Image (cartoon, rainbow, N blue to C red; front, side, top):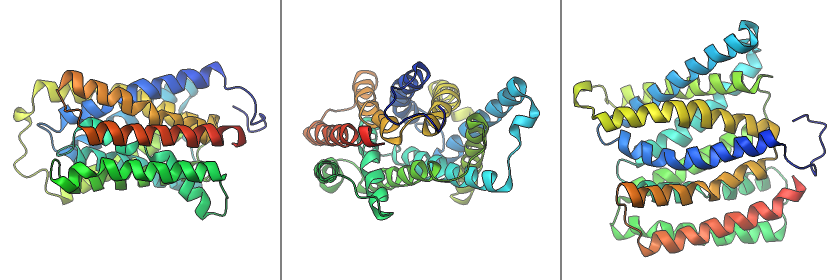
Length: 304
């Protein structure tokens, strides 16, 4: 989408297609992550996922547009690395770590608060959101309080819940930064560098955590391997690339709508496939958060 396109213009078919991919594929990745970390180390597996996807995407860009399409200025490369570390290492990596102790559906519902944090970041830079938007943020915070109750009650690890909350803040910061920084002109090139930076960061963190000690690939289950393959192709190569493209081609408030679709997909899959419990904090808190995000997005979209 050209930067000269009026903000009131209707989204193109390409935008809706990319949104649909992010809606469905990312909703399913929470279950995929849960299956991966059953037998694989969190940061090393996440790092391998994004490095592989980043290399595949870079190869695809070079094949489709020519090797010159991978060129970037120092400033563009630095911006891509920063955004990649925030989104991939911080936003995704902490979720992967958290899902070793937190149900995938609960993790998705906590991540649904991303648009709320984006509003907070906007307000911190002098942008004054409408009162209705701020009201949505306050309601959403109440929903988050309900969602954290399983951690406070001991039903799940509180540390895992807090990790997901931190991940959503870092993901929001990365998304917000991506709309302000100078990234490579080709969004797919930018996506490849972001995945590579975040993936390398994940491997480094995994090594620092000692995840390689006693590592036995023979102990990795077939289900974990298949889930990792799914995450590489559909979660990273397709889903993450679609998201990065959307950050440059559509209003951030419209892109953020994935946050209240993903949890519905994630909760349903977690319940159907791995029998995750639908407790009252998850149902009530999730409903409040999703409703609040809906209010925020519907209020902001005409003005973005």
